[in-house]
Image 1 (spheres, rainbow, N blue to C red):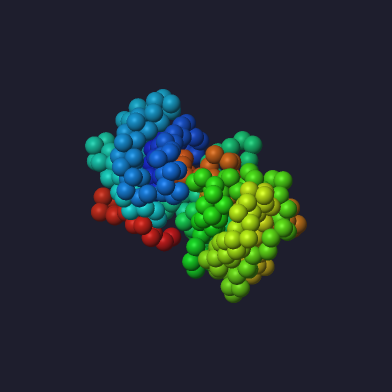
Image 2: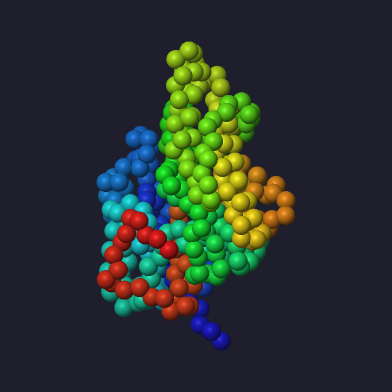
Length: 336
């Protein structure tokens, strides 16, 4: 009988400090400490994020072990986010993981954050069947927008990506112009429920192949709002729901057009989504309405940054004997 594998996952790429314990690909605990301090600044402040990680990381890991009822001596390997992300934040998680690995004499596994998002589909869930290989994964967050061809657990390649801003940033910056709090994406999702998706039209990027662009759309949104506000100071409050619905529709429509093109080019009908923006209800609904595709949507709690996805990636790397070492350095721009 094969021995169960216990993985400690550590995630600290941006503003959430998270630790998880997995037994094989089953979650025993997944603890996340959010950083509320960034809300008043309208975005993540890197220096404040790294300081908060230093404060949170030990209690978060202690709680993950306690909830899982696992002693640190039972851990088989420690997986951590090597990148991409904010350098100061990455260094906190990476340094702790290396120190813990040395102290316990346990293997160290470095994980690409985006790879973790994709492999969150393979966290064991009796109510969910994971994607079948090969599949296309639309990986969308505040910092990244990619189409990834996934042939196996650790065989992935980016076939399309943003050439400027990410879809999540387009949501958050648009929300800021509308006077909404950070993070703005969930608020746009909320206010769009009763809005008219066709109320306002924005510039549509004309990028060939499978790449994305959102900078022009962001500029178009800001110009329309500023122009209308100059005529009517109450423009936003009077049209908030329609503005949110129109902005959301424009962003999601760009994503859907590219993933359909990717499917046409590759012949692959299995489509998954991952990353923070995959929690968007309109994106989920529109994907499920696509005809002729097998669509896979992760459990809501694994959409945003969390250590369970890092641990499950670590689990598959452990099985494949892809272990890291103490000389590996964190990287803000880490590719697959």
